[in-house]
Each structure stands twice: as C-alpha cells, then as structure tokens.
Image (cartoon, rainbow, N blue to C red; front, side, top):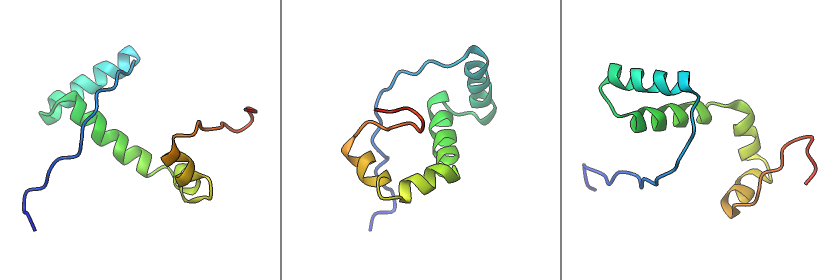
Length: 80
C-alpha cells in the first residue's frame, strides 16, 4: 500500500459569496497560510458532514439513491 495517496479530484465551480463572507474567507486563509480554495473545501466538508438533518436525509430511502442519480432535490413545502 502506498504511503502517499493521490489527492481527490478537483473541479472548478463558480460561487458568488457575500462580500463579508469573501473577506472572511481571504482573511482566514491568510491566517492559516493556505489558499481560499482549501479553506472553503475544508469548511464545507466539515460543516455539511455534521449537519444532523442532512445525515438523516442521506440515510433515508430517497437520500443516497436520489443524490447519486442527480435527481433534482425537492424542498419541503414546494411541490414539484
């Protein structure tokens, strides 16, 4: 087994951030001496993985299979 592993695939994605959030991201990236991309990836991964409602949805019958197929998500209270 290799000691050094291949990094996960990266994809380009354009996001619009509110100005204060963008400034906070840049400031925090300078603080930890990393790129804003790395900080955003890390923060999203940790935050979303800890969301209890998302974890329940993901474990449910429609969560994982719908997510893998790329089916549009249906928001509660909004008929499709």
